[in-house]
Length: 177
Image 1 (cartoon, one colour):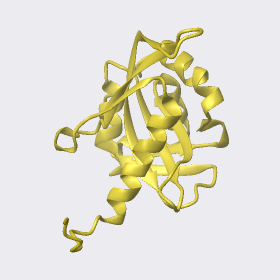
Image 2 (cartoon, helix red, strand yellow; image 1 turned 180 degrees about the vertical axis):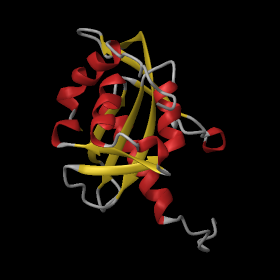
Image 3 (cartoon, one colour; image 1 turned 180 degrees about the horizontal axis):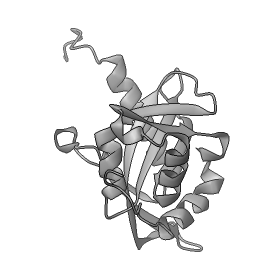
């Protein structure tokens, strides 16, 4: 008979993080979401390969389009506009990246199942907006990423993200101004 002795406690932050990852994976399906092991997390949590369902089959074809992501999960209710503060060094890294980088913000449900997902593609459009609002952001310890209602990602709106990734333009000014 198996022991029923209680084991270690799972921290709330780990439950929230796992639930956020599960919600993201479910929302993006059939795209291939590959989280990186936490031991090699250096500002990027994983990558996503776009895929399309084949008509009349329970199969999908992987497309030659990939982007990387950073995932932030919370149990707190996200009201828009919402500002997520990230280390300026991380934001500078994402802006200099040679592949598209998206930041996903997931409001996890209290039951740790599903959630509301917001996405911000870190690209030249993002940089222009950031510099118009916070021209001296590079001198700060943390930089703001602003999420608005239009950044909410629903299953039916994934094509909007796919198109943005396909049309991605790297930030032209990742270094000090």
